[in-house]
Image (tube, rainbow, N blue to C red):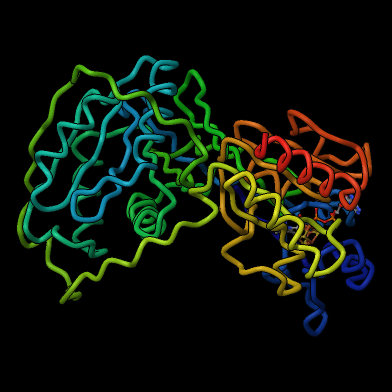
Length: 396
Ligand SMILES: Cc1cc2nc3c(=O)[nH]c(=O)nc-3n(C[C@H](O)[C@H](O)[C@H](O)COP(=O)(O)OP(=O)(O)OC[C@H]3O[C@@H](n4cnc5c(N)ncnc54)[C@H](O)[C@@H]3O)c2cc1C
Ligand code: SF4
């Protein structure tokens, strides 16, 4: 990064210069040019303004010795020792990345009474599990959990740390990143690693219009969060490999201003994220009552109905049924989309499904780029026929 430097004496006509900025970030403050927080650092004012009026000064970047940071670490997300499945998905990705740079995979497991569960992680390709088993870590409390994370990073020095984008992960990862003044990329959809161990963190940006590649070249560790069902979990191997390290931390570091009186488990609802078959209603469905068609198809297939964002915004379906960037990520065995265009914000939440079957009357609809099978046609003609054919097959 760097900063803009304004050389007031070189500005002959402030108002002309202000017109150059497409973001309205320049202001005339009693004859002096000022740049406000709307600045996007596009540097147009530097390139197109009068010579030398606004200049860009590169920041002095502190170089780091990347060779001192080794290993890909995964934070083990759990409640009372029950490991969240996103952890195994991240271990699978960490293994893949670590093989590219020939480094180990670590798991950071903190809690109380968890030592037994730590052994389980060795069946998934973790080389070393670092366990902090302490009564003060029984329930998730942000201060002691951050302190343990900090202790782990200071002692192990992993080059990258992957955290599940769960309620706990989303709260913990930014705190840890701030402690180390390092970068954190939330909700990555793709992760890769360069030979120099820079983690390539890919995620939709600018409202999903681009896939941004984010790197953290000047600090370590590199932190990324990933949503559940975005990466593939490895198969559990029968044999355990690797070792479990039992770690301790000074008790005063585990103090907290939070007292947890009781943990009440939320009743598990079966949502679209658990469905094996999903029928998605898009804007091709013309009225709320026509959702019955999608519901009927879903019922025959033993699945659930989901929807695109416009239908949720119209109040036709519950927000829990939205698939996509600002909704849920799903990975069913079969997903059937009815009148869905396939905007990137939608496909980001379903493109890892096993089979994608799209029905859309526009043959150029982007959904056909991610679909394995498709029919170009009117859902109002095709879906009733499909329902009839499926019913006939069931009755045979
Ligand atoms: C920051 C941001 C986040 C977003 N997050 C999400 C998100 O999480 N989920 C989401 O879904 N969207 C999200 N969106 C909105 C997204 O960009 C699209 O606008 C939305 O996905 C479009 O929904 P749709 O496909 O149902 O509608 P449309 O894009 O209007 O597509 C309707 C499709 O139906 C077809 N069609 C019409 N009539 C018929 C018919 N009779 N038979 C067959 N086909 C027919 C048309 O050819 C068209 O392709 C987000 C947008 C932004 C900016
Ligand atoms: S860098 Fe771009 S956004 Fe910032 S003040 Fe200049 S023209 Fe405006």
